[in-house]
Amino acid sequence: MKKTNRTLNRLVLLLTGLLLAIAAALVLLPMLPVQFDPVQQVLQAAQRQWQVLDDQQLQIGSRQQVPASLAVLVGAAVVVIVLLAVFVSTRRSRTRRTAAEFSQPDGRTVADRRVVAALIAEPIEARADVIAARTTVRTWKKAPALEVEIRVRRGADLARVLGDAQQRLAEWESLSGERMPVLVHLADRSWADGFRSTAPAAR
Amino acid sequence: MSAVETTHRRVLRRALHSPRTSAAVTAASVLAVVLAAGVVLGVWMFIDAGFADTVSAFASAAVERLAGAPTAAIGIVLLVLALVLISLAVLPGRRARRGRIAPHGVVVIDDGVLADAVADRVARRLGIDSSQVSVTVRARTVRALVTPISGVEVAHVAARHEIERTLAELSLEADATVQVAATGRLA
Image (cartoon, rainbow over all chains, first blue to last red; front, side):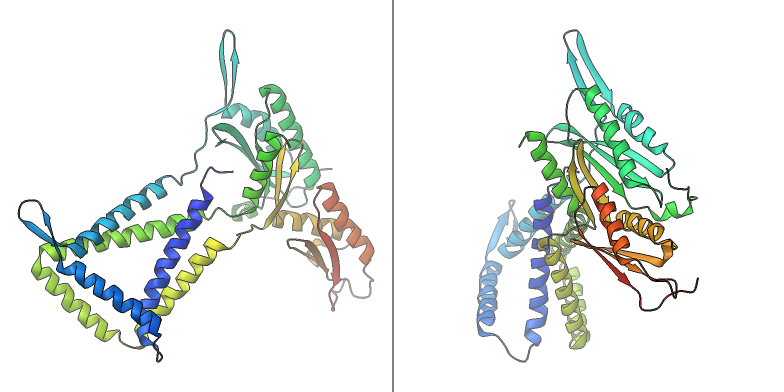
């Protein structure tokens, strides 16, 4: 339930893939026994255009002259590098400290994420058939959203674990006075959980 | 449909599909580093004519050494990487999990967790060890492969009903099938 722009992720992958495909074509096409005329024409036209740019000089400062081709390449590369840096820096998953806010006539009460953990994750984790439970408060459209991740032991009654989780969430909704987006995730055991002992399934 | 229900549908859809963040960040980082190296190299070659001659000589020698098969290998590697990235961008990226909207939020269960639960239930119902039941969870089917005890008939119908009961308790929908292995195991 992370606030990442998925469309942008796929766009970056597509553009990088297309760039690599063009590089692969530039390397492999000249090696083919049969040369494709339209491709050859495009390559030759690009080469001629590049030569025109290369012949032109740009004035930088009072004395320095730089080939236009170099200036265009460096300028474009710098813009792309900045955009990529901005893209990478915005991919972090941000969690919230505040799970809920209650405004009253005489003030404001804020429920910290630890309140949610104490109400929901800790009782679930205390179950014999649960290895670990964790709550994370995230942001969804500028409002808090809750993610509950539960790792169950082998042999656990999944319906009972989910029923318990639903009950805790109902209590939280009653306490907070609002319905927020919630994701309950029954997750696979990690490799480290293999070192924990197996308890008999809860009856 | 209320606003919360609409949100839960979106949350469910996002939880069941990969965001591709790791792949996108890796691709963007590598591309930024390569471009930065290219900018530094290009500017340095422009400023320092001696360095430009060294780089040109190195590039010419490299092109000669890599002519033929090594160049083709590089081209093929680039092509494969390109296809991988384009596939990641275009394919839906469905995760190995299934979910539903519950009264209080969205419930998502990893296929591995579901498979373990089904295997345990089927094994208990048939009176065999859970290691004799192998469960495969696909998008629309849950299939149990049972290795029977030699000489003991497997109650297909009971096993299938157990799978359906497990799914029903979790309010999940899938077709249940049971297959019995050709060779059994000694008791």
